[in-house]
Image (cartoon, rainbow, N blue to C red; front, side, top):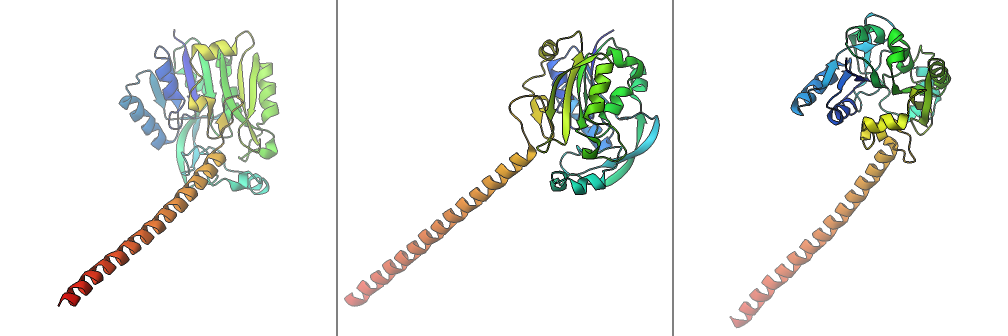
Length: 295
């Protein structure tokens, strides 16, 4: 049997496709419930000739069946979830209140299943790495691995700092419960890093007690990958943090400066043209004047 890598909440494939390219001998299972994104992933893998990347259009949950999936069309749909947003938390938190992507534009029905049931359909030895980013249900998904939990070597997941910081309603997952669960199930914590400027959410990087996270990271060539080192709302532990708000502010300022520079150049150009017109008129008048004097 071969080892595998899982990406729960694959989105546009920034993690799963890149990992597949760097590890052609390992099968990457990309799980994405949103049909539009799942189709995009399939086409990308085909276009880029990545044949060890398999897309599964399903949502991982603690329940089997069919459930409502809330779509956020803003940005890359990264805040889409099986859960509803917590209106109370969004209104009370200064940072969440500034985010334009925290609203749903569509609801669809998707197939859901526990991770254990999903893995029942695969043949594998070890799960070398599991990336979980499924908006409010990360810890729930990991817990649903059931009998396969002890076959997970390492991974990363996202959780709110406290229940009161959660973007989503009807979830009890938080940083404390994640650390407690990992500790009780034979995992050690490699790093814990904030997921946003307000530290409302954290990313937890973990591996088995007997393993070296750094060695596993090198073996899978995870570093120097934007979706791993730091992308949008989740970041790899480092001294360099990347936040979308900073990029937006820099871009906005750069655009404003470029527009101002363009306006200044336009004004100078208009002045130059106006001066040339005056000079041309004067030249024509002077020629007519000289001609008139000769007559």
